[in-house]
Image (cartoon, rainbow over all chains, first blue to last red; front, side, top):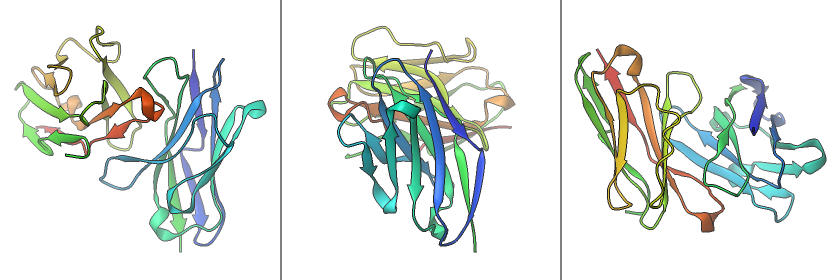
Length: 113
Length: 114
């Protein structure tokens, strides 16, 4: 069965520091991969997605993620954290053969001033 | 509208009452999903509709929960005899194969059972 693992339920970084949120998946076929963000008291919105084009995907708000097939990873990064990045981030994967996404448990990003 | 809409945005009910939550997906999206998000928790899959196929109800937590989707568009999630543990935000999403299965989320309905 497919699974998605997000390492760290909480990640804390200082404002201006590098953000790295980890996501590993298990899939027997090339997947579609997604990162969603949920700001406090809001719904989820798409940050970026990988759909078998370029392995480095750029998203909104300066975030990007790199698909590494050999490592089955799709880690999310941002060079310099901003206070407004404080939110919960969810990684999700689809094998592409059906419409369902498998969701990670989420990582709360905390930005220290 | 351009996005997924849900109503009501907030619902407060008494234990034992039935509630109905509504979701209007993006026009033309063939897949519709319901999730539950309890306070501080991740997404819990509830049910999934895809076109005219039988829905995947594998995530429904009990037989008090049911959902239907009429005409391949609007969906209603019904919770009968609500319990306090049903208190959560209920999220609806829709997707289309052509968009790579990206799910578009509504703002959610916050359900509080007193």
